[in-house]
Image 1 (cartoon, rainbow, N blue to C red):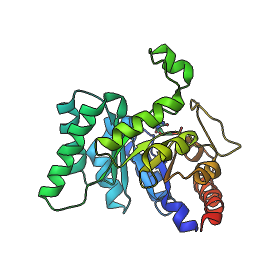
Image 2: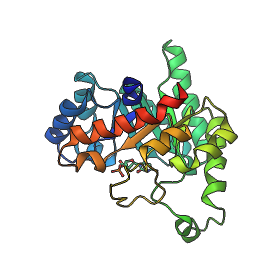
Image 3: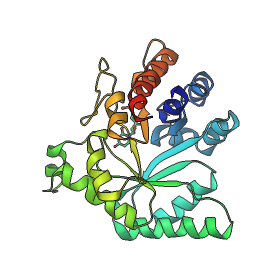
Image 4: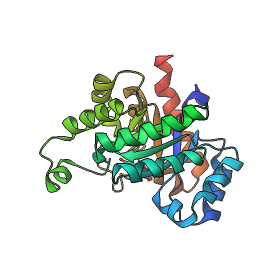
Length: 245
Ligand SMILES: O=c1ccn([C@@H]2O[C@H](COP(=O)(O)O)[C@@H](O)[C@H]2O)c(=O)[nH]1
C-alpha cells in the first residue's frame, strides 16, 4: 500500500537553481513517484533539468500549461513528447480545436514511431482560482460547472486526463468515467499553510475522493525535513487507500 501511495505522489520541483533541483531529486527519488517541472525551473534550466531527472531514474511531469493558437500548442507538445517524459499538459481554456490539434499531432507521431503516447493532461480551472476569479475574467458559470465541462472537452479532444482540484473529482468522474486520469494539486496536510491555493483538501481526502495523482510542492520543499514531510504524506495517502484494497 505504501508503494502504491508513493507512486501517486508527484513532487513539484519549484526551484530556480539546477543544483537545488538535483539536490531534491537525489533526496526524494525513492520517496515520491514523479517530479513535476514547471515554468520557473524549465525557464531557468531548460531540457537539461529533464535529462538530469531521467538520469537519476525519475519520471517527469512537464507542467508548462501550453495555451496558444492550435498550431503553436501542437508544435510545443511535439517538443514536449520528444523529451521522453511521462506527462505534460496544456490549458483547457484554449478550447477544443487547440486540444484536438495537439492530441492528434502527438498521437500520429507516436503511432508512426510505434510507441506509447505520453499522458496528455488539460488544466481545468487553476486550484488558486475561486468563484470571484471566474467573475473577474467574465466567466459567469461556477467552478463546479466549468471543471467537468472542460474535462469533457479534453476527453473528447483525445486527452488522457485533467489537472483539477481534488474537490471536483466526483464531478469529473461523473462527466468522464473511471478511467480518465485526475491529477490534483491544491493538496495540503491538515497543519500546512494553504499558501496561494484556494480549493484545497488533505492528501487523505484527495485519495478518498479518487485522485490518481497528488501534486505537492511547498509542504515538502519548505519543511524542515523534506524527507519526513514526503513520508508523512505518503503514509496518510496509504491509510486512505487501505479501505479501497
Ligand atoms: O491548478 C493548478 C495547476 C498546477 N499547479 C501547480 O502545482 C504545484 C503546487 O505547488 P504547491 O506548492 O503544493 O502549492 C505548483 O507547481 C503549481 O504551479 C497548481 O497548483 N494548481
